[in-house]
Image (cartoon, rainbow, N blue to C red; front, side):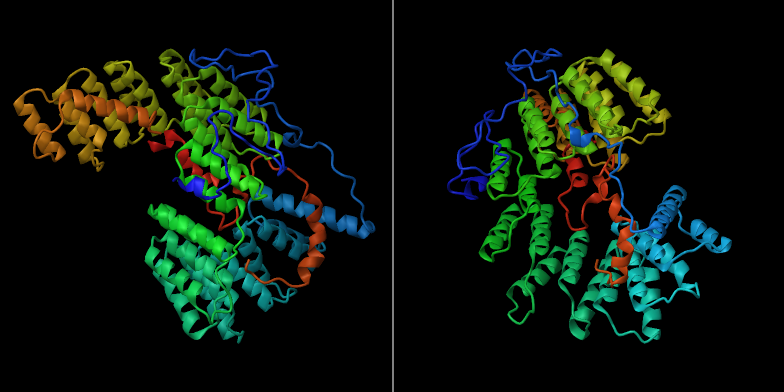
Length: 607
């Protein structure tokens, strides 16, 4: 029985296309999921696959929703008096100058030099706002400046915010300096300062020092807090110290004298750790323990489970379970489901899920668009991919190099090399520098067309642009020579791959073995690939190569706060309604199942 089916004994298995996606929890079953306007809207562009009975590109496809359109009018603001209005406008001007210049010191110094009023509430409001925006470099810069100002009473809370900023930046040298200064000033040891130092070590990749700091807190204080445990687990997992992380988690789980037990974020981190280590069974056991210990599930919990699965049925079943649990999918949830359908070459479902995401008011990110784009590119559906590509710009998301590489893949998989070359030129015309993924995608297209000359020409262009090849580039060149039955050249490129520090993968070995015809060639191929005897016939090796192509369509805080912050809130509360063009950077530190991680789901990144 699959893991998804064990989540709920009452869950019905999802059908292939008529998959249930309930937006709200209601007693009666929701209607089947279908691409929007499928029956009523005439096709805008023809579907490229004759085998598909659906025309999935239609009028209104990916039409921008109201919530995605930038608001041009602000709500009318009401101020207590003229003094407050002047303060708020002055603060906004200060913030604009800092963000435009990238540094806080010139605007602050300028105001002091001119004798302009620089109320403490304004300064504190600036600090708190940058803290909320996680612009810790500006927080640290302002606080270091304030330390030298006689008119500012630099308190213990300011020191704690400063060391927290250095912790977030991973600047452990400055964090050590601040903690030493605090000790010299006679401040009592604080869990905040020690946790910040530990985090600085972790972000600075000083994993052993981070663990030593944590052990010292355990033995001699200050006593670690739940946030301390969250950060040390995250640090150890990032450092691949899985045994140590597991021991800390289990001790907290089983220690009866502990004042607190593992919380939701700690469970999430352990699920992520086991996923990263490839131990999915243990990750699922941790998930089961959450229910046993009455730890509430969250969207992140189910996102973690969805990220384990490769079968779209399993992913969609977990997605349904999340909705039945009363949780709202976020952009990561939708992206994982879209990706699962795309990998299964079920583009109609992928598009329908994307439309459902827009209808639910969830703002897509650039990477979410890239995942949908990839769903069409895998099957060579150029017109549909172009529609997605254009909609990115229309909705204020500038395509990145991954977007261009994926769009290029659509042309390659459609065997339209003329269109691929034109789009390749457009990449440079649009001001982007083609990377190894882009060149590799173009080379693969010519290799599929059995055009060895063009493959090598693209390779030379890549080297002239000083783009370093990778393993997949060499494998593609070997494949091209293989299609021309050129064993000698394949051996040369096989050796070149090894000399460049790329261990040949199984596909490269299969290519070499398939080309070996004479007994002498077979002996050389066996020696190079590490085979004791020739176990692959040419026909069998060719089948394995083709199978690899099918599987891989392309190788692509804790800082303390006091009542001052409440006084400062008036300066930034009015900005809370603003929409940002791309909110990809808003993830919490421990929300590890993010679109940044799911970028690896796009096949083009396998290059």
